[in-house]
Image (cartoon, rainbow, N blue to C red):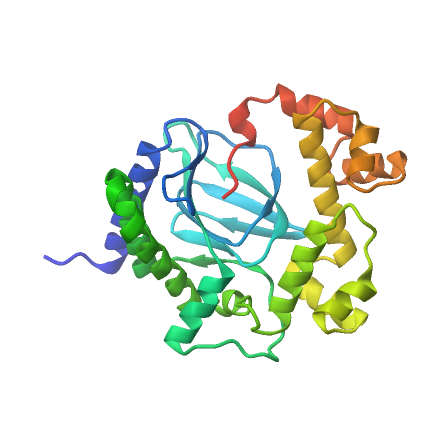
Length: 311
């Protein structure tokens, strides 16, 4: 007797959850032997984790998560995936979970060059003059994508097969995402594909020089745009202005320093590009909810799992 599509998808999700749980015994993020693949587990709700998401596809097998980009909220749960096509400063928080049914997710990094190759092979391009779209979206995974994820995770049982077979499964996952109804958000990031691809280069430039003053005119010239056009397309892709983007990068890096290095708030502020410690303290509290000293004290008092996971 054949299994209908919804039952088959539920069965595949159960298998994915079992495989993720098998290779992530405790809460946290686990890098697998296939470098592009990570597994995420959390047995309780987490505090918001602020990080810069790099291009990736994050599929949830169990539990639910809330992600914030600027003022936009994205929720996703079992059988849904979160696709990020450019580097974006985001906060993520596990919101539905229990010790009996932990949050379980898998994250696959994607390469814009792979997007270009798949577009050429499938003869499906991105319109050069199409409006730039948001650099992330949430979508339901089709059965074919779930099957490809399952094949990829099964390979963890036979590590000797990973070098040959894992890239094939990962390539199919990306292909399925590109062919989906929202695949244009990924296709637009292929090198040379259009305005959004140019914005991706601007993002890369800001991340490389985030400690320096922001020179919009120089960035616009490099992207072949006017300053006003750069602002418009940048906001289309990231939901924020270039200055707001740089501020988030600076504050997240300062927070990382305060948590991992023996530095004071004023020194961290200076190192990430702030000239005024008072301005740094105000903007830090506005983003993270507490001034630097109070925020770091709170984070260090939390169990490690409460801030774990980034997919």
